[in-house]
Length: 277
Image 1: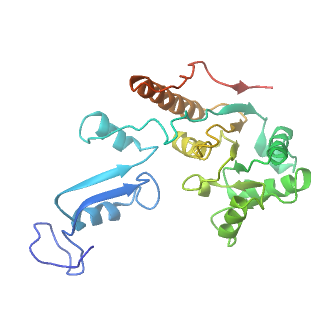
Image 2 (image 1 turned 90 degrees about the vertical axis):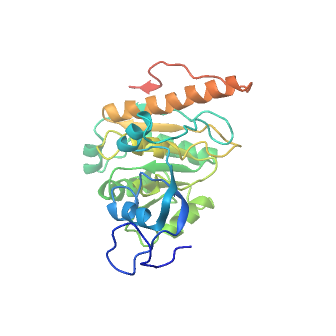
Image 3 (image 1 turned 180 degrees about the vertical axis):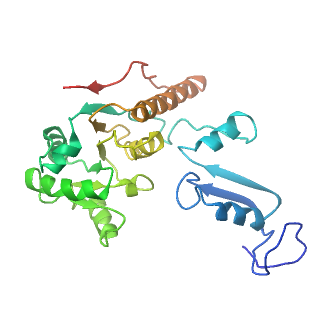
């Protein structure tokens, strides 16, 4: 419990409303994301709210470069957890070329491969996420999906006043495929779901974003696999980094299981499933 005080603190004080020296342990989940990431006010608040020698535990699947460097050079003690609770490997992405997706949207043309992917999800009864790089792309794509695949498909973004209702309807199976911006890249778990990234070569989809998006797949022990596909107009370095990141974790997970007598199959180290058709 944080208590406001201005007494007996060795730290600089600004006023008597500051919460100081109240806690011993801090657990900061998703440390690389909003609202903690790149916000010095939160780091400042943690420093004042903790007792001298307080322990800070940072949790993240995709730590930023600064935290990685501090871990690798020994400044931060840490542990790498390469496996999910069910012990199965992370699904690896498929790379599928779809041409100039921006021009297709401008011309109101539905990419055939994406339409087929969405239709297959519906036919198989598997919820499908489609991540898009921006609201404008979402607003162009959703009407095309409704017209060519299913009128039940919806889209959601941070400024959508019905976003919570749509996400809940998606979880309940009322919406079979949900197109979304990166607002849903973290913290959303829908069992038996598959994920597509439309325009995976867009700048907003860096390694961390793509890894987080891929993390929507295979979270349930009953369905640890699932389909993860990056639809693109050209393979980017960030896409390759995301693939290597996932493979590295899978190799470490397989090694961890072998060392403990578990069973798992280590993934190969080829360049992956890249479809240029």
